[in-house]
Image (cartoon, rainbow, N blue to C red):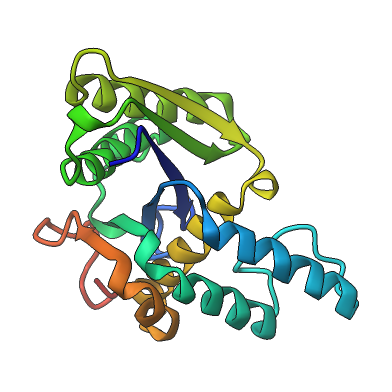
Length: 226
């Protein structure tokens, strides 16, 4: 068991809770342990792409072209045994008005996500947990992220275990870029029904929890799909 566990977090969807917004919002965590071999291979491919003529500073699934996207998913698949993926899937049409405030929404959903991640580890064997997220544009969202993560970590970790929550630009961590790709594949499956890339990462998915599956919709069923 490693002394340190890295958790890379990503999210997808939008905060438009009307019928014109995305149907789902997803939070995904990719847990990794050093030596991060998937990151080494992504670095090699990045320079291959640059030498081919692409102006590529980092990988971002939604914006990468189909060829790059396929190659990156191929690299992730090559290292799928080294990744552990957990995701919380939110049906926005079933999200109560009181939870549509970003800090409350983040705090609740991230709390569930971190719980699913950590309950699969013997935490007494982990010296430190390092949580890394992309930089958030709104300060109050950052505070909600940190508050939810720190509250859950403090409640679950044994005495003596330490943790840090870091907000870095996604371009600075291939781990964040892997999380972006995994979250994109999960959101796309739920949002559009396209599970092509979800099948690639599926062997590493430990939980994909449809958190409001049994709740009551806020919309008429003939107006918006559940």
